[in-house]
Length: 572
Ligand SMILES: *[C@@H]1O[C@H](CO)[C@@H](O)[C@H](O)[C@H]1NC(C)=O
Ligand SMILES: *[C@@H]1O[C@H](CO)[C@@H](O)[C@H](O)[C@H]1NC(C)=O
Image (tube, rainbow, N blue to C red; front, top):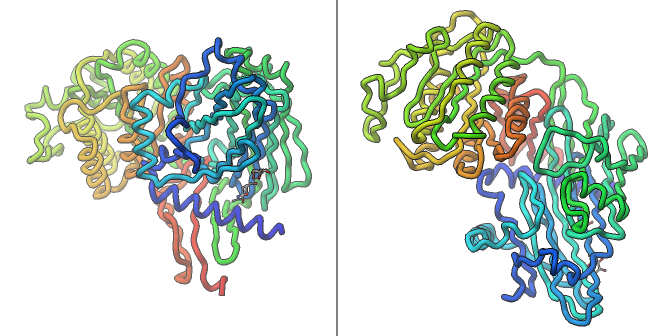
């Protein structure tokens, strides 16, 4: 029995990882599910949440969210039961917000005592539907509260007078380790206060669980101010050192109170995120292998390592669209981020719009714009620029004096002109190369390129696909520098930046345009500020097959590397 459970969770962990690595950039929007009984009247995006219609919406009398976490793999089922008390039929809408990395594994609708099972559409087809829905304005703005880094699943059904309906949705996700803990986020927003509302999370690990907690509820939209009044007052039951159960059961009064504290409408009930964090004990080498029927998952998160010295190249967009709040927030964030560099780190400061400037901190007035002030004629598809011909300032040691100068320089940034992403990235990578070949000391440093933009490429090379290909090829030839891409605000092409980052061993993060943007930027930087290992390469016996990615150019403190495979000898 237990063995069977472990197997299920292990195998699904494996498939999840395969799935994630196989289609990293495009997989996020393929979560469109339709009922098998689907007909045209079952639209997924009707605007029916306005207050004057609300009282005639069927009552949700029960919402139970049950999550089973086995070895960081979470299997969550949401059950929502509604009753139509009116004398005419009404439309019941079931809407769930899922973490971006979760996938739906089951959906059942029970109407009139009959069960209808949904199927997940093929990815292409689903994506098309999704795009069409987005274009026609459906899906968006359907439920008042939205959450960041998430997808929404919505389905509506007609409920006959004085009858009931129920929705059963199961989704699965691999919890990611970040900042030294695994975090599970459960979005709750039934759209109305619910008499019987409960969340239960059962965590079972093969290692000792530690630091288990349920931090204050979040809106899912702003970070920073953890309000103690939003303590979920969850009931944490430690069954044994490897098993725990967390329960959260706010009554209607408390749901309204939470809604109020989160700044949403009390009549729409609780709309926020219930969060669980924990870590597991590990041995100092940080390795852990789970094996079941030949499949294995290898988790690796060493603890006792000092951070590597690094060379951070900041490539920052100051095109005219950054004008206003965004540039302010960028300045605020850079002020903090620069202050967090270690004294053995190097950094370079690149500003770009139509032109690209590598700041010379010792002589700011002498810093030139490429290509406009260098005699170079600009981007030419047939002729790559030979950057060796130009002189660039060296990277700077993160001494307090240099940091002070850099902060001052950033504080003077003035947004102007268009966005030449390709040249900016090429110059950034050239600086990585320069710092590596013209070292002033014997220290090997891990390069990290942090790229921030709020827009599309509008001058120079303008095809996102070509930029991605050319930059990735160029970066692969030289020693790789991971590229971490930050898309800022609504105009940024998120999927382009995601592909660019993933192909260059980094990751992309979207910075939402809101009052906490500076905090989001710092939060992002914290995740990449402590590289612990470079060029990690996992080697297994030849009998191991079906391996997922085994080479990781960089491993950051607080995170975890995961490799899966099949060990045939063990199986036979
Ligand atoms: C997830 O939970 C559902 C419902 O409890 C169950 O049917 C399914 O087998 C579970 N999946 C995994 C991978 O454990
Ligand atoms: C419909 O499916 C749910 C979830 O599996 C189950 O709990 C319920 O009893 C089923 N109802 C009927 C009528 O089969």
